[in-house]
Structures are given as C-alpha cells and as structure tokens.
Image (cartoon, rainbow, N blue to C red; front, side):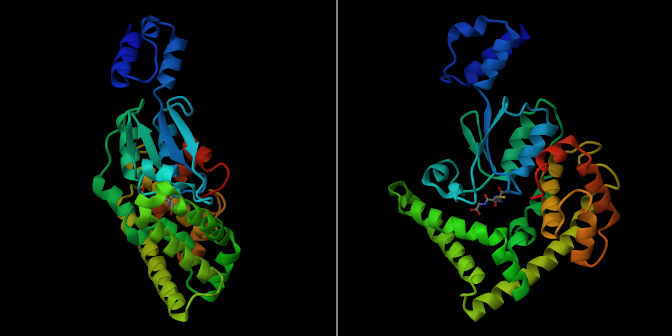
Amino acid sequence: MEVVSETMSLLLTFGGSGIKEGEVACRDHRLHISLFSQMTKTLYTFGGSIWSAAPELAIVELGYQDGLDVTTKVINLFDGENCSPSFLELNPNGTLPTLESDGRVYTNTTDVIALLVKDAPVKIRSGSASIIETIHEEQYDPNFAMFLARSDEELNAKSKGIHGVYVSRRQPALERYSQETEAAKFKAFYDEKLALNTGMSALFAGKAPADAKAGYFARSEAHFASVKTALFEVFPKFLPDNGFIGGPTPGEEDFHLAPWLTRIAATSGATSSSDALAALEVTYGAPVPAKVAAYWGAWTARVSWKKVYADSLR
Ligand SMILES: N[C@@H](CCC(=O)N[C@@H](CS)C(=O)NCC(=O)O)C(=O)O
C-alpha cells in the first residue's frame, strides 16, 4: 500500500511525466521501480571535473541507486560542451555539476548537494553553510590550482600536458558555439570565455605579452600560497581528529571537501590514495597536519571514494 501511495504522490508531483493512470493501481514492486525510474534526477557531470565528484560521492553515500534514481549525462568539458547554447539554456553559468530534478535545475555544487541531501534515501543532517562557502572561496579555487604556473618551467610543462590539450580543444568549440543563432543571448558569456581561452592559448604557446605572463606568474604564486594556507591552517580548523565533519560517516560539508583535497593532491602529482600525502609534503614543503592526513585516510577508505576516483584522481 505504501508503494502505491508513494507512487501516487510522485505522480501528482510529476503530472505530465508520461506515466499512464492505469499503472498506478499496480502493486508490483518491479513496476514501482520502473515508474520511479521515469522520475529520476539527471546529473550533468564529467570525469575530469573536480566539482562533479561532489554529487558523485553523495549519490553513493546517500543511498541513491545510480542509473535508476539518478541518471547521468556526460558533458565533455574538453570539447566545450558546457558552452553549447543548449547547455546554457539549462545552466547559464555553463558549469558542472548541474542537476535537473522535479522540473527544476540546480546550477552550482552547493545547490546540487543540498538537493541530493534533502531527497536522500539515507537521511543526514544539513551541513554548515559557512564551512561550505569557505571551501568554495575563490582564493582556494581548485580549478585555478590545476592551471597555475609560477615559472617558465611550470608553464612549459602545463602547455605540453593535459592542460594544453584542454585549452586547444576548447578554442574551436567555443568559436563554433558562439556563432550559432541561439548563442546571441549569451554574448557576454562567450566574450568572457573566448577572452580567457585565447589568453591561455597565447600563454601556453609562448606568445603572451611579457607583462601578461608576469601577471599570470604573480597570480599563480598568490594562489599557491592561498591553497597552502587552506590546507595547513583554514580547513584543519573545522576538521575532526577522526572521521568526518558530519560525524562517523560523511556529512554535507564532506561532499565538498573530499573533491577539493583530492584535486589538490592530484595537482601535487599524486596518482592514488597511497602517494597523496607524500606528494603534498613535497609540494608544500611540510607534512600536512595530522587532521588532514586522518581525513584523507577516512575518505579514501570509503567505497564511494574508491568508485568515484577508480580511474584517476581529478
Ligand atoms: N562555483 C561553481 C564552480 C563550478 C565549476 O567551476 N565547474 C567546472 C568543472 S569542475 C566547470 O564546469 N567549468 C567549465 C568551464 O570552465 O568552462 C560550483 O561550485 O558549481
């Protein structure tokens, strides 16, 4: 009976979802599953995206059935698919993760995670908004942490690596999308993205003006220092000695911090759970605080972390 009433309430919520009225009376569990599957959430994500890892971890930890409760659509950032006019219609920020649920679109990591927590099969308490905001502060941006270069040597290495591929593959995609008729209303978005990508292309090709390169090195130096402060001073203040910010199991804040820490380990040259602490120590010149090390151990032991980072750290 409970199955039927839950299905009916879902039907009311999702009027127009294409489910036939006659199906509601059926108490067959398999049918319930198939009805529910027509009401899934859709997560727009990408394997190389740091912030997409947050909902991917949450989906496992919160008991969602991947592919059933949540359908995943890959938006390839290397091909600039997040900048297509059709994706911008969905999320004008052009960012991942993006989540569609119940006819609404959630356009940033904080809102996506909050919604996943709210609707979760496994209930957890809401996290601290101020901790989540701190993790997402611009000065600790893990995406710029990946692209920063403080010297010619670092710049050359990045231009020859995956970073160079990323910038060069996006350029033609951005140019093409920005010319589409539907792109007109997103002109400001394309102007900004093209300017950024063109500037990065010039830097990587060694064709940027000297002052632009010096400015990039200075900005990179400041960002590196700021990430170090987060890792050694700011974030340990809200970390427990053991377990998670949310308690013995991950809470809402933890879905934000795990991707950040994993990305910073990856930018330090880590390739797995086991070499991360050593890589961070070499990069930042000191062992990370005990709380950070314990937190890393707690996360990397989770099935969710092993699943999300099975292919590589990102
Ligand atoms: N503050 C945003 C940042 C999201 C973000 O930067 N996402 C990256 C992937 S991790 C992205 O979509 N970048 C697309 C681009 O740079 O064009 C959030 O938390 O949602």
